[in-house]
Image (cartoon, rainbow, N blue to C red; front, side, top):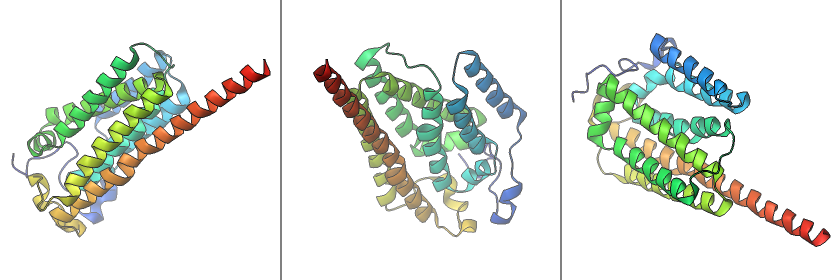
Length: 245
């Protein structure tokens, strides 16, 4: 895959032209609108759903989309916002369901991890940036598996949900650490796209690894701690009611 192949978000922008690089692709805007309406028709609550689709609009319509063509670190921020912010907001918009049990949670956790790692293989990454079909597959599988994961987390008891979140935190942190400490830039696509932004390809990759390692993995740790606190408060409240009775 040659780095000069035009990616979905357009050619590499220079810093001075970034603010003008909005993506008003009728297809993506139509998909966002249709997705929102279908979710509302399915009973999704408007508050978290609006938040989730606002994040998706930032990622695919705003000039940030073009920035991801230039910087792998921007692409990593894109992925973190997609799977750790947009996806849980969309998942929270739907009613809590308890179908599937621990097996479903484990399956979604493994599937989401496998998809995340697979798209960060250099060959798969190049395919996604150099092909509209590849780009659509990458975004759809990352977002779809993340929504499935978060819905399974929400539907599961506190200890099981916390375990899945901590496992996801660890695998994301490991991927981030590998990118941070790699001795060479492994994504050929960005060998000639980062210099205009004051970064070497290796520095850009190290920054991407830190983004995934610290705020990316940290989002799952925060969610695990929040769920643990809610679970403990629920148990304490139940114990107090039992004593009062």
